[in-house]
Amino acid sequence: MKTITSTSILLAFLLLFSTSSLRAQDGNAMHHKDYIGENPTADADIKVVSDYTNAVVSGDLVKAKSLLAASYMGYGPGPVDSANVNKEMQSWETNYTTQTNRKVEFITQTFRVLNGDLQGNWVSVWGTYYFTTDGKDIKLPYQSTMHVTNGKIDRSIIYFDLLSVFQKLGYTLTPPAGNK
Image (tube, rainbow, N blue to C red; front, side, top):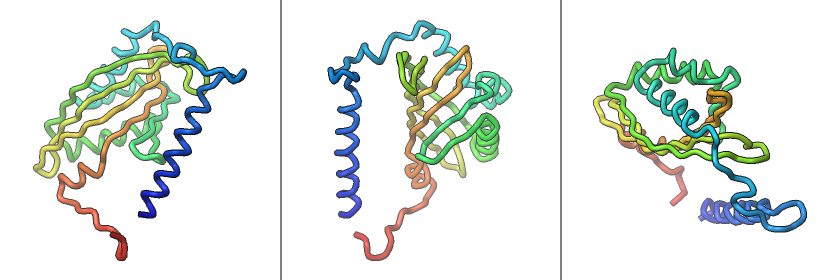
């Protein structure tokens, strides 16, 4: 119950903050077109992100690395998870040692953030990553959003449910004693 209450308070705060942050400095409400626009390099940016996604899944790390900016930083799935180019490539190399039958299906959408810390061209990827590990077939839905600058991915955020993968592999989640 304690967790649910804390989560509810946090959600209420975030909702209030996000609503108030969508106001211009003069106090007037901002509209969607005030901060989001059409990506003028949509096709090229989608190709970069699609090529990167297919390269890492197929095991072509040379091509994958060539599509990342030297300053690349990836975040997720957890709030403290992050990786630079080298760590990202090492992570995929590790995956290849335990995963077989890798494939991916995805769709993309793109947009441009007009100002602020997130300014620039973004490509959202909604997909499913399939692989076999420890003799078990895993289906992992994910969502990733990647920032593309000058034909390179320089930032990405990915979300997926890691607990579901562990549970498919036979792990169980046990609450601490005394919690119900």
